[in-house]
Image (cartoon, rainbow, N blue to C red; front, top):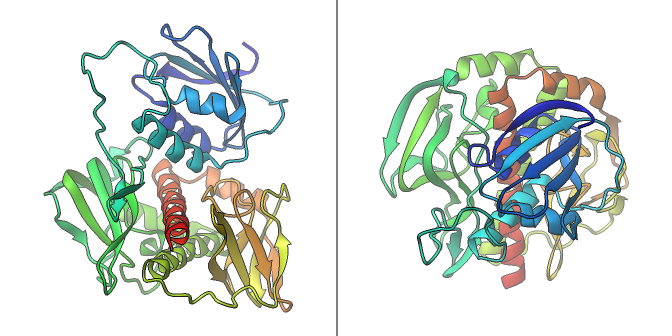
Length: 393
C-alpha cells in the first residue's frame, strides 16, 4: 500500500467510532482501509486534517459508504498516512457522522456486519436521552482512557449526582464505565443536553485556569457507573504554558458550550430571547464555506446561526475575546461546515495564526486533547437538542 502505515488493528478492539476520534484528534490525513470476512468488499475512508471527506464500500460512495461501514463489528483496519487526491463530498462534521451513525445502528437503519448473533432481537446497551417520551440524544464515547492521569476510581449509583449546577470545585472525572447525563435545571424540570459514555469527561476547560468557576450544569449517573478522578495538576501546568491566543480559544470554546446550553433552556421554556438578534447584521461566513482562518473579536459582536429542519436557528452570540471561524482541531458542528456567522457593522477582529495554534495543539498530551474533544462533542450535542426543540415548538 502507498503511504506510511501508522495504525492498524482489529475492529473488535478499536471500533470505527474510536478510530474517528483518534484520527480526528490527531488531525490525520490519509486513507483508512477496512476489511472483513463478513463483507464481500473492502471499505475505504479518506481523511483530510482529521475529517472524513470521501469513502467507498462496494457500490456505495461518500457519506452512504461511511454510514454502512459503521455497521462493521468484526474486521481489520489499517490507516496509511498519505496525500489524499479525491473529491471532498462529505459535508457533515466528524462528530455529527459518529452520532448519526450510532443512532442508525441502534435503530436498525444500518445493518450490522459480523458473526451471527445468538440473540433473536438486538439489545441496545445505551439508549438516547428522552424528551416527552421520544429518544433524542445518543450516547457519545471518548477515546481511550489514559490511566496515568487517574488518581482514584469512584463508583456512583443510578440517579446519583456527581456535580450540581451552580456548585463549585474544579475536579474533573473521566468516565470509565457507564453513562452520565448532563442537564440544566429549569422551573419546569431538568432538560438533558448531552449523554456521555466511557472515555468522556465530567468537567470543563475553565476548571484548568485560575479564573472564577462554577458548574454550569448538573451531571447525573444514568445507571451504575465508575469514574476516574483526574490528576489535574499536570493538565493545569499544560494550560498555563499555552500562548494567550490558545488560552483565549479554549475559553471561547467553553463559552460556546455555556451559551448554546442557555439556548437549549430558552427553547425548552418556549422563550424567545433571540428575537431581533440578527437584525442589523450581515453574513460574513456562509454555511459550508471552505474559507480558512479563525478570528478573535476585538470589538462588536457576531451571531452563530444553525439550521434545523424547520429553518434557521440563532444559537448564540460571540463578543469581545471570543473566536469564530475554521479551527481544524475543533469539530463542534458549528461554522463553517454546519452554521453561518453574522456580524454587526462595528465588528473588528484579529486573525489568528493557525499554524502556531496547530503546533501547540499537536504538542499537548493526549488527555488534554481529549478534554478539548469532549467539549466540542458537548457543544454539538447541545446544538442538536436546540434543533430538536426548535422543530417541536
